Image (cartoon, rainbow, N blue to C red; front, side, top):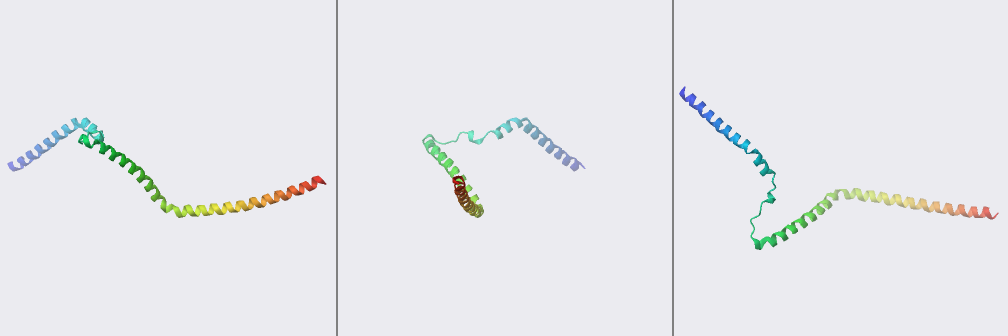
Length: 123
């Protein structure tokens, strides 16, 4: 029976310790949140002065690489759409050819009509 009470006593002690720990965490919550929100890049990097020039060059290279990578990824993403784009261009070319033929026919009709009008005017 005393073993049972000591076991309960141990559990109570564990819960008490956990409770104390959680209270401490809650008290620190604001400073913890601010530390989590703060971007890591604001921390100073432990880089010796002679190497700073190389770090600047490396960062500019990294920016260029990321910009180029984005355009390459865009190109790769568009590859599956190329057959559809080619089909659409073929359709557009065909429609344009039909329009050009229609325009030529219309131009001929207008010229004939103008000749007829000139003939009527002279009579």
